[in-house]
Amino acid sequence: MTGPAPLPGCPTWPEEFAARYRAAGYWRGDTFGSMLRERAAEHPDRIAVVGGDRRVSYGELDARADRLAAGLHRLGIAPRDRVVVQLPNIPEFFDVCFALYRLGAVPVFALPTHRLTEVGYFCEFSEAVAYITADVEAGFDHRVLAAEVRREVPGLRHVLIAGDPGDSGFTALSDVDAEPADLAGPHPGDIAFLQLSGGSTGVPKLIPRTHDDYLYSFRASDEICGVTEDTVFLGALPIAHNFPMSSPGTFGVLHAGGRVVLARRPSPDEVFPLIERERVTLAAAVPPLALVWLDAAPDTEHDLSSLEVLQIGGAKCSEEVAKRVRPVLGATLQQVFGMAEGLVNYTRLDDPEEVIRTTQGRPISPDDEVLVVDDEDNPVPAGETGHLLTRGPYTIRGYYRAEEHNARAFTPDGFYRTGDVVRLTPEGNVVVEGRAKDQINRGGEKVAAEEVENHLLAHPDVHDAAVVAMPDDYLGERSCAFVVPRGTPPKARELIKFVRERGLAGYKVPDRVEFVEQFPQTGVGKISKRELREAIVRELVPELHRGR
Ligand code: OOB
Image 1 (cartoon, helix red, strand yellow):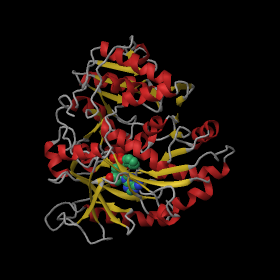
Image 2 (cartoon, helix red, strand yellow; image 1 turned 30 degrees about the vertical axis):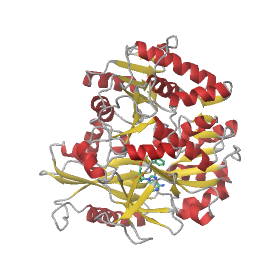
Image 3 (tube, helix red, strand yellow; image 1 turned 90 degrees about the vertical axis):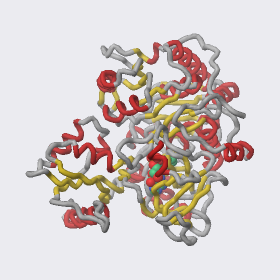
Image 4 (cartoon, helix red, strand yellow; image 1 turned 45 degrees about the horizontal axis):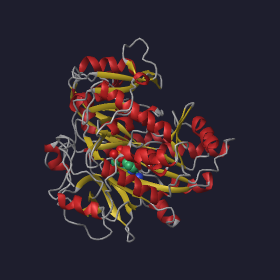
């Protein structure tokens, strides 16, 4: 089975692997569009998505996707055209996704916290023809951002607003509507969307995922996570992120014919009443969010007893937090260690408590190949710590249009260098021990040090900058920028304001700035980030003793 010409710049699996993945039944030749069509035919009246005051049935979602696809087509959006999608947790997110999938256009998923720097870059780099965003979210007017993006990216032909366009002059998404057309639709091997990588380089990388590979990842996740049509999933994390999207996430739940319940904000005052009202059975959280829920649960008047499974992933879940899940919530903990590039590991629901508390689980697929290697790519002895490499039926073979970076991020035989430092238990469970990539994991939100350093370096008073992780009780890590000033150091506050005003997502703005005369160096003269991390810990110790 060979498809039409693929989207240029997307490395794919060698045919021998593709044939194997098809033969094994992983890649079944389905698409997002056909999946929704099937569910809608089976039970058109079941509720698929609940958000705000909307309750959308499978039949309605299917029909709206058809009409929106036809409307977008009429605007001139064609198969393989890229469309940057930046939507909060609202039902329209699914209208847009399924419409674009039906059309064969390719969403590029931005997070609601992204600002001009990121959104402008996604539009430009992917040569997007359209940008679909919200009106006002979390007090931020996305229409103003959209106007800036429009000015900076001349190639952008359309801006569509989910909600009220106000006086922005942009089109309301709800006005994009046409009689369903007979669209050819994508091939299952086509790129369905471009997802964001957490990144460790100057600019974020885009991850091309196919219908075949992505559908496999959440179909198989459904089985592991016990998802059925009775599952009610709480989407409280930003739903464009890979974890709540597919592990098994919203799409896994829609695949099974279950119900997705969207929370606009993840705080207990919004989430707990939703759990009670909708009888939520499955929820996904990053560790700091799980902590907030665990702290608030004992005092809530809301009935949380429907919750069967709480998934924690995106960053390492401490054993202390892990221990509290069952006693406090009466739910089974599932640890999820995944990455937007592909590989996802789960503790299994029937694993011994010890495994669930102390490991990050094992891969989805029998064909996920996992290697733990030393600095020279040689396998380490069983049980020892090393770099995690992986390839498999839903792990990409390269980033979108990033040939040079791909040569470093993948081995010659196609293994993805995850940048994670892990060990395997005798039972084959993964334990994440650390990270080799130059990234800060701020409670699940990934910050590429180099990207932030480049913004700091743009300040006239900054001679050099190095951003490192510092430990934090709540987020696990926060970012600390070490700066060598050019002459008199600027105020830390001023530098932070400078970076923020460059239009960067808030979570990437350094949490702390430390001025130094020079950086410690490694043997070969590189900046020793290890020493900087140690320095900030020493700096923090007296503060911790003072109780901050
Ligand atoms: C998920 O995806 P990304 O792409 O935002 O980040 C991936 C990276 C991993 O390489 C690892 O460094 C870290 O996030 N990570 C974890 C972890 N889960 C992710 N580190 C320790 N323990 C965990 N449980 O974060 C993601 C994608 C799909 C499912 C779940 C998480």
